Image: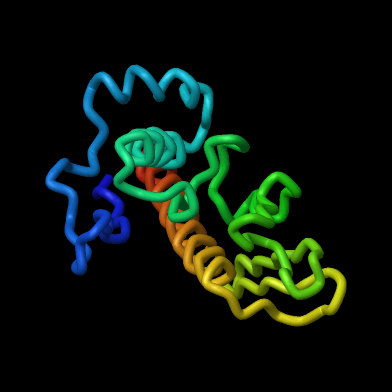
Length: 162
C-alpha cells in the first residue's frame, strides 16, 4: 500500500508550510504500539491506515481533524462522522455557532457528496471546520472504495487460482 499524503505541517513562526523530514510510514515500534488494537479488523487496509495515522498524529505530523480514519470507532471517518462524539463546539466541527446547535452530516457513498447542515436553522455551514470535514470524508470515501476494490480483486484472483 502506498503511503497516504497528508497536509503540510506548519511550524510555529514559519511563514511557509514545510514537509516533515520523517517518513509517513510507521516504524516497527509504532506498528507494535498501535497495531495490536486493530489486529482483529477484517479490512487490513483500514487497519494499516489506522496504525499509520495513529503514529503520525502522535508525532504531530497531522492534526486529528485531518485523519481519514477514526481511532475511537476503528472505522473510516466518513462511516462514523455522524456520531455525537464528533461534535466539537470549540473548533466548530459539526457545530453551528450562530444557533449554538449540532450540525448533521450526510455522506452519500454512491455520489461522494458530503453535506453539513445545522439541525436548528437547516442552513449549510460555510466554515473552515466544515470544509475540513468535507475534505476528510471525501478522502475517507476514496480510501474505503480503494480498499473494497482491492479486496474484491484479491478474492477474484484467489478464486481464479483455485
